[in-house]
Length: 97
Image 1 (cartoon, rainbow, N blue to C red):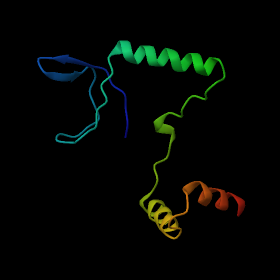
Image 2 (image 1 turned 180 degrees about the horizontal axis):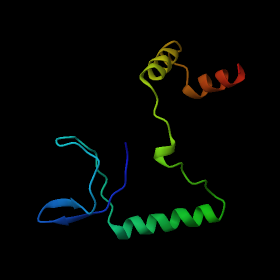
Image 3 (image 1 turned 90 degrees about the vertical axis):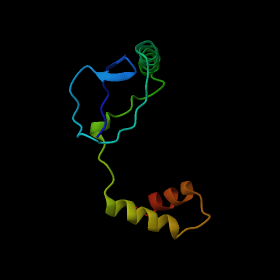
Image 4 (image 1 turned 135 degrees about the vertical axis):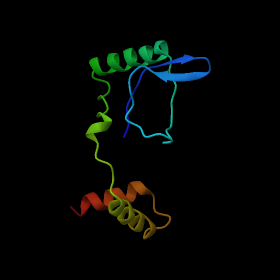
């Protein structure tokens, strides 16, 4: 699960401004962006989208995670073609559809 939160850094600790859906002791990965940097990047992305130069990325909640079975199947297919670039494997599979 991914979520973007706002937190305040105070006395050496990040304090979320809203409750999180995490369990005690759960490990997370953080990317710290100040609101100024985040806002600037967001403005640039919005400008590029408005100009038709990029398509906005899907919301992470809209993307289905790969199942363990799909991951194993993909790994086996890649191992079956050692040394072959992934792009060639994709092109071959698209041609067989």
